[in-house]
Image (tube, rainbow, N blue to C red; front, top):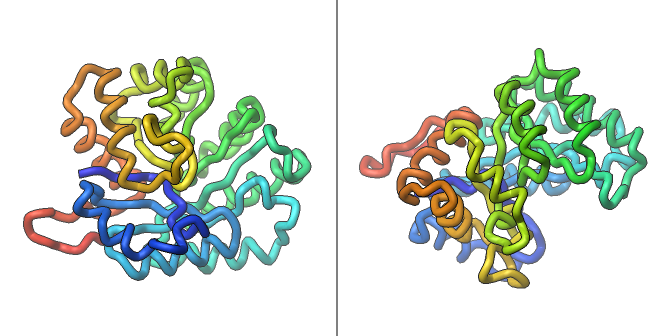
Length: 267
C-alpha cells in the first residue's frame, strides 16, 4: 500500500471523473493521498476533498507563482484553514526562479511569512524549489530552529545540497522524473537518500511517469515511481512502499490505520 505525498486532485483536469478516480485509488494500492494547496482557492478545495474521504489529507499554502498577489490578510485565512483536523502541513510554498511569475524579493518575503505561519500552527512545510536552490537553502537555514518538519517536494537539487538538507533533518520527496531516461541527478538522489528520509509522490496531474508521459498523471501512478526507486536501490517494492508510507504518516502526523481492522485514520 502506497502514500502519494503530493497531488493536486482539485485541479480542473480531474473535473470530469474526480469522484470515480478517488473511489478507484484503494483498489490500485493507494492508502493515503496528500492533496496540496497552491493558493487560497485550491487550499479551500483541498480541505473540502479531505473532508469527503478518510484517506485524503490536505495542506494549505500559497505557491511562489502567486506570491505577488498575496496580502497580509491571506496569512490569517491560511491560519484558520490550518486548524482543520485534516490539514497536516503548510504548502506548497517556496521559490520558483524558472518562471519568475512573482518578483523574487516578493517570493522570498512570502516564503518566510508562511514558514513563520507553519511554526505558529505547529505544522510541517512542503517546499517548492525550482532553480532557486541557494536562496531556498538560506531561508530554510534561517528558520530551521522553528520548523516542525520540512520536505522538499519533487526534489531537483544536487546531492551536495541534499546532504545539507538531510543533516537538518528534512525529507526529500521523489516523483515521476525518476522514471525519465535523462534524469541522471534524480536517479542519483533516489539511490543515495536514506530510506527513513524518503517520500514518494506524483504531483499529479503533472510529471506523469514513463511510459505514460504526455498523459494526465494521477495518484495511482505513484506505484511506477516506487517501482523505479526500488529497482535503483535493489530492494523489493513492497518494502519501499511500507517504509515510505510509514515515513509520510510520521512526517504529517497521521496515525496509520490498520488495514485489516478497517479503523479510520486520524491525527
